[in-house]
Image (cartoon, rainbow, N blue to C red; front, side, top):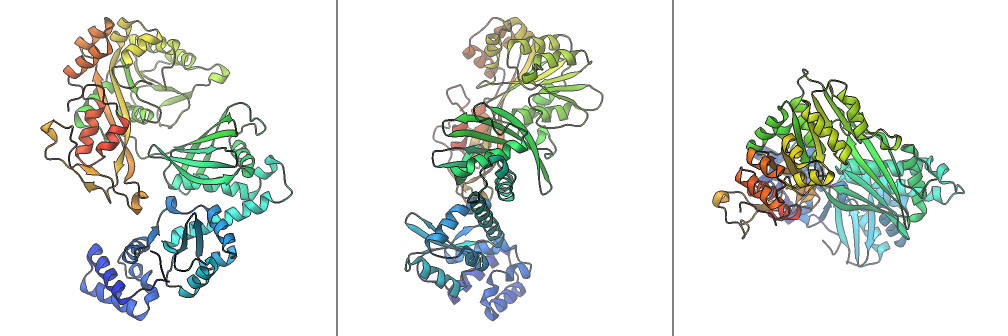
Length: 564
């Protein structure tokens, strides 16, 4: 909304009361109490619904923003960068302390000027700010919830402290990394990543500034930009936490550390690599404790769920999970281990690194830097009387050979590979150096998977089935598309779910594998045996309104045979 200083008119009040009554099904007494309070003191507009037990404060702000036509800053992803705020305060000739004290900030970006406040009824304060901005009526009001205003104030104070520190006489990156402002800056980045449920933090050096981006639901989004003058201190802080050499900028380094954010504990894996502007630093966030790992919660269709549980109950053989990095392979394997674990078997895992710690399972991290490879660890564990062995990844012929021999000697082996689909596993193992007849004799089942973003439950809209769909099985379905709201940070999606392709090695398929048949022949036989491909499983979830067709098309290759 742009224009003169906004007021809350009688018409606005009536619209607001109608909205809140409709949304929260108010009775006559609640409507009367709310209207009476607003008539006595309109400034209670923001707090009255919460005081009367009608709704939470953030929900009241959402309705106020809708009534007044304001944009709403309601989550961390929408909070402006503190550096942009401080720059805007300086351009307006204002004191940052004055803005913090009154809970109101200017934001000047290109041709748009905004005022961010949690109370647009502070007419005197808004008037002072508009005069300082000298933009007449061409200003936009952005309403911010009190909790997000507190976050913004914290970010602004943190930014000011870092600026003051870097203007001091301290020049050593190691010394700066131990100073409170740099510690708070790095902690703040990690906290915001955790709050926004990011899986990775990317810190990327540039020529004039470095960019901090988060991977959320598989997609990258910018968190903030910082001047390059701060990069060395931030990098040194992360290296200190990870026990890395802060002076080494020419070679890649890997480390890890742990953090506590409220009740949540995280292991953070750190990878640094040199680039033309300095270094690229990636932090992978791994929760130490997750919701109970269960195959039932991963989005399997019932037939696929039954099949993978049957594979887990096999006495021997190899079960493989395949897919690109970040597709949830480890989560699936851990859930399968949780399904297998009854306390009457010996389960061992060899991983690099150990991502989740499970009670009752022997877990070991491979360390190639000291010569303790997957293959060496596997040889050791074969002498420890295991029933089930999980290998983090089959990367080379030696690991593949030992996995095959383990399965032939009465062990169930679970592992992962990187292929585009389930049937590609068989020629891939042959390419690694395993004889086709051994592949056919040992592999019992292969599962390929991807992660698709789930549509936001609050704002997704109905849509028509895709034009290419010819299968009538989806006729009475719930096809939906993304819209965007404050709940999902206007992305239309929130969270992810797996789509799966399970191929059981039947007698017919086993014969084709042993004879080195083409990939097309293997896929055709798998389909004949009843396999459902990734694209098919994705369409099933799209037809139920869980995800969108566009999202399925984004993550799936459709050049393979499907049932549509």
